[in-house]
Length: 293
Image (tube, rainbow, N blue to C red; front, side):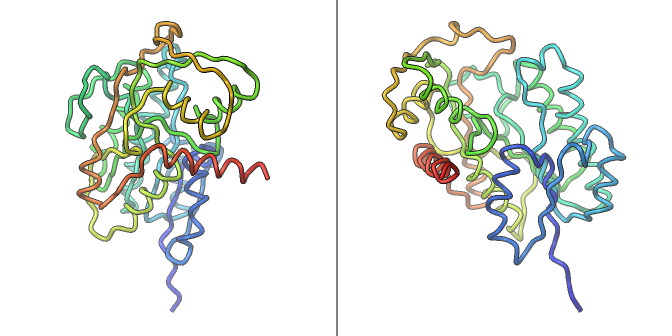
């Protein structure tokens, strides 16, 4: 009797994280089937749409990478942000509970206010400073309330060779500018989305799962300025980068000034060893070079 492999349903197929999951999926095809659905196929804002997609794919695991990520625009479009970032995870969790499907939901460091000098652990008090952060926090809470087989993974400063992100923006500026200014008073941890994708697969592959909230990023704290400087170094650019305070670039939505995440829990529960952000950045730049060949 032929037994089908468990199906992993990846929601938000057009985003950079989903594309990174697809990139590494070839290493797991003997154990899992992967289905990637975009917002056109599944509208996470509507429970009926989610259920229809689950009926078609019958997943054992669901990775929710979909999100409303326009941080500043969310301040004037709170209903849109909450519909995707809060209602979406809740609808997924409700349907996951009906199908006994493990839900892995990706969240953000923006659930914290950034007013501390120590790394945030999963139990620290949340205090989002923006509509985006508040909507993501609500999504976490609702998903966890609706389904006990929910795993929330908060991450930060996500980038990759896919989509729009800080690394690709810097590389574009390096080819079009002689000098740029980059904020030097905001601290965080860059995260290569391929590394995050690998961690999500490690969680799925773990036989004894621990549910709840986890933090994952690459190892090491930096600033946007130092991040940009390292991109310059590795790319061989001659651009001049000037450090400036965040007040030079006022934004509609407030960003956390320091949102470093503690990685202790995910290492303890899942054995995750996070690479240094500098090493992962180098891997991403190599991947970008290969895409251009």
